[in-house]
Length: 223
Figure (cartoon, rainbow, N blue to C red):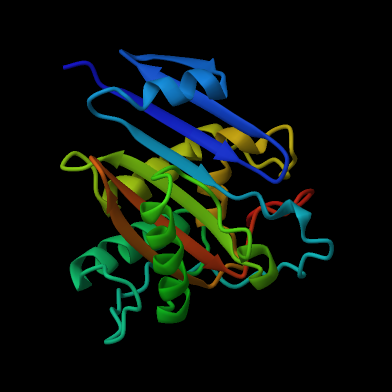
């Protein structure tokens, strides 16, 4: 079976897509990326660039942490299971610990907010779109869509984390963030809370995580 993986990254004023098929990676237009969704097994990752926030907070420099113990709260806030929350927290915090950044904690409020947005997407176009209201809340956002039965919440987090291979310590800009923006949001030092959700939409599953406060500020580094 032919398997195509499509990653799309949308910022405030640009969209970039890359298609990976049979070991080859090539840029594709947004029109071409829409056609790719018809393939049998597809995943799409999309994240926000919170670069439009005019005054980013000062960066802090805590000591290099160990991977924190995963604590699943009694109130999850979305329809994820406790095991799914544990998986997402473990993958996020391992990725952060690998670069000396303290782990995030789960926010049921943020998860509730994300679930509400994904439910709207499922009731509408079933396509990846960012919540425009997240900017006022100063939330960062990562989105992923994949064929139901092939992909889950762990695949979403792993897809975002895999972009580490493209990040080499540079400051974020509108010219360079398309290849690694999901990863840099995952490890952004000042993002301390995460809340995620998922929804089934036709033959696909959409996974989304919001981060508080947002990362991916222009002219800053994640850690």
